[in-house]
Structure formats: structure tokens, C-alpha cells
Image 1: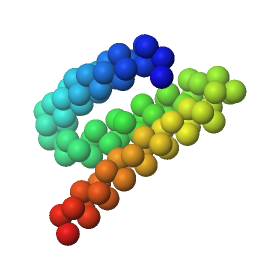
Image 2: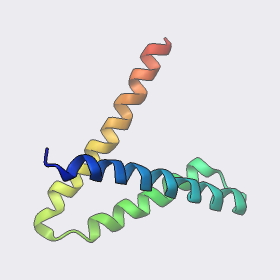
Image 3: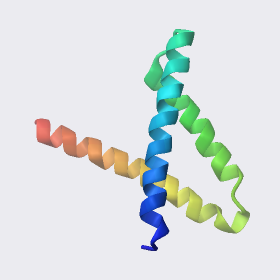
Image 4: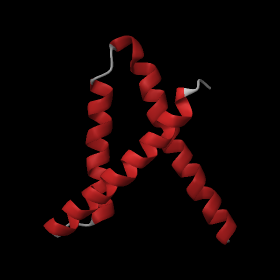
Amino acid sequence: MIDAEPHAGALVAACAKEVSSHIFAYARDAGLDPPSFLLSVSAVLASSALAAQPEEQLPVASRHLQDALQLVHCLRGGESAANA
């Protein structure tokens, strides 16, 4: 891991937390379900991020998104197993 990666990861986490709170506020103000609205916005952002990638980087970018989704799925699976 290069020196900048831990800082970048912390910055991404902080940004995501702040943006999520704004998205939830927009949803509540509009009378929408906040988690569903966050999912919709996230899907559009993920699609936009992939569309912005150079063609040669698209497979790596796509895999990065898939890995992130798999991580969430695995974490939730672990929570379900722990609660059983």
C-alpha cells in the first residue's frame, strides 16, 4: 500500500458519510424513503463513475465497484450469522 492510500481511504469515508447525510436530508425533505433514495443516488453515481473511466481502466473500475458491493454483502452475511 502506498503512503497516500490510507489517507485517501479516510478521505473517501469522511466524504461518503457527509454526502450520505445530505442525501438523507434531501429524501426526508421530499417525503421519500431515505435508504431507498440513497440507493438510487448511489446507483446513478456508480454509473456515472464507470462512464467517466477511460476504456482501458473500465474493467478495473468495474471490479472495484463489484468488490465494494461484495464486501457489504459479506459484512451483512456475517451479522446475520452472528445473530442466529
